[in-house]
Image 1 (tube, rainbow, N blue to C red):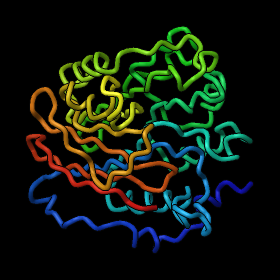
Image 2 (tube, rainbow, N blue to C red; image 1 turned 135 degrees about the vertical axis):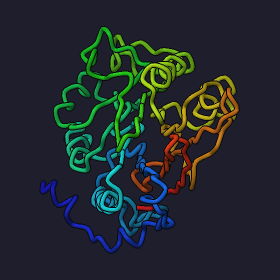
Image 3 (cartoon, rainbow, N blue to C red; image 1 turned 90 degrees about the vertical axis):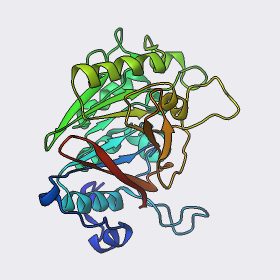
Length: 304
């Protein structure tokens, strides 16, 4: 299989047509710092575009097209973070045959910066996931999965901090409860911890101790559960915590054209975003930081 061709065989012109332009801003005059967050979720081993005969997603998606979009965006702004909210695995024969090798290698070629774990990332067991990590040049974060007695102990960290042009960004991960989703033999001694309590601890560390300018949660909790009022979702997480600026979600395959804005415990805005599934969309959120680190944003979902 010529894996490199997945990246190379695409046209830059198509990517440019698909990417909306940003308004011109005088960065030099106002000393505004521009950070671009790109994100995916629930790609589920969809490497190729959907065929032209597909009833719902004809000719959409595909790793090569996503790679071209990402490359185009990086050319216009060097301060980019590329993130994924989990469920990289399971959904096409690529996973059945290669066990996640191809997914991780292609994500590495696209230069993903960070990923969290979804429930389907345990489908080959925690040992199967571990066996593919050497193919990933990026890290994984999960704060509410305690891996202490597993092979992932010390490998999957609770959070990671990035510095982009003087902007300090803290990113932590959250995973969904295993019950009813993951067989005990697949997650072994992994312990699930309360995501609300863990989030408060993460934001305390990232905001107060580490002095981050932007805090992002990579969540695989799910966007919303109208019929299960007690189940923690991204919308509930945003409302019941503080100091999270952006929640990038997954699991529920929710297609949002732009982020939902939720008021947190302090009455401040939290952006909650998710871009569906199968690599059909690429999420883009542009943050602009003034001299005093106050920020504004623009956001959109880009069809791949």
